Image 1 (tube, rainbow over the protein chains, first blue to last red):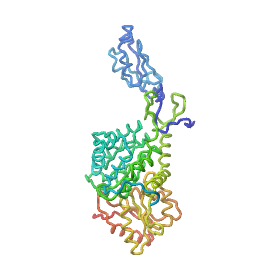
Image 2 (image 1 turned 45 degrees about the vertical axis):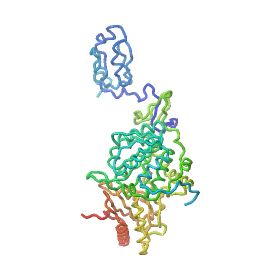
Image 3 (image 1 turned 180 degrees about the vertical axis):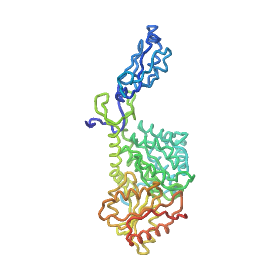
Image 4 (image 1 turned 90 degrees about the vertical axis):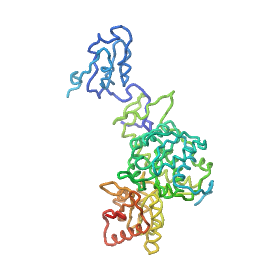
Length: 102
Length: 408
């Protein structure tokens, strides 16, 4: 493994998906759409509300009817669950998902 | 002196005026600084020059030294030639950004007008402030008089922009900053010939071709958007170290280039006075080393073969050059105006490490002096040299550091 093809003498990168690596591996809790029917977009069948998409600091929530969350990059900060006015998203500890066994 | 001097004329000026004059001659584009004694007159002068229209630069007033260096970092990132200056607690307050400027490889030039750190409060000279930043990844150059201050700032921009490493130009508070002496000011055309406009920065700043700069860079290399494996944190740090080490070649080269334009050379990494046949080398940085030349006058008059070894570049540390300069000396007595508490003076410690394992290395003795502006006289310096020689003749090769003039 060599970085001989990298010509960045100082720290710099072209913005792209996953630039900071698979940050989903940092997560200790994941957002889960536990009350999908409560989501305002799902209720109205329109791309409305979208506060979870607006506030996600890692841009890993899609603008859609019912949020789609990319768990490859979601760090599990919980902001989406916090800002959801309908309480549709809950944070679930990773050890309960069976993905992370402590 | 050699070459064809090209000077605007000799002016009597303080060290701070020499620093400001050099920054203006370097055609700095952004200046951001916060006032602190004894640095304040440097940026007062630059502020006046910007205000009068004499210097076409942005002068950014800020609320702290931390912000001053932050402004310099951003301006330097987009390609401007930038300058700041500070002292003592101001430098300490900058500390976080001092590391950022170096790690981001920005060719910022900063004057450090050396002053003691609090507590207790003190505005007078020692070199603790800059010495405490020695590991931050900046180049550090120390000046012995006001002419060297002016010339070294001009060197500093050139050096910084070749290796993409920021440079601290350090000079003693009050002893040089507020002391007037004649300074040969080079013609603008001569400076322009020596110091071309800043080359293209390492970072790309282009709205049509955006970049993340200083982004999270974790331990391991990682592929970028194009699939190229990019440096991890350690690779970037290794490149930084390589650039600072490269400055060991660049500093003397730039000194020679400057000498070709102005006729003045300052010795590059080190300078010597009557060292060639000396049995004892007196070692220091800054104006203290100038005083050592006076002490050597007295010692030589008594028949003591003493000489001075002045440290101009402290980072990168010129280990090989010091080994060569000290070959054949019996004793090296290092005077430090700073201390790593719990150990010893920084120049002394580094010199011992540089000589470790050398077959004919001199004994290295240390002396701490001048802290908080305590006066150091040539008589004290020559007396310390005599004691060192006496101890060496008595068979001592190591001894505890002396504190000169201590009343305890």
